[in-house]
Length: 114
Image (tube, helix red, strand yellow):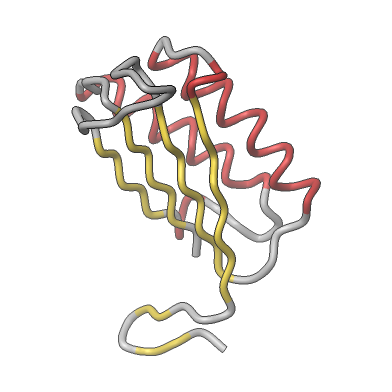
């Protein structure tokens, strides 16, 4: 049950949005047992964001998963998602943050997973 949020101060058109969706759907499989079937995405563009004291183009990527992730998985995901998002949005890698959250509490369809 992964959830990925992309937040940026750039504009993302529909074509680019679909390219990101496809790429993230493939990358989520880096995490053991995670697939696009359960992936929920939230893409927020045109946000008021500041980085390094300026309005330069930047991205925050949030990754939330049910269960645990290994350092190897998150490290590989950071490398590949930074490459994907940076290249698609034409934003330098040093203007991209990736943050992770893992939980053993996740609800769906009116119930929590056990």
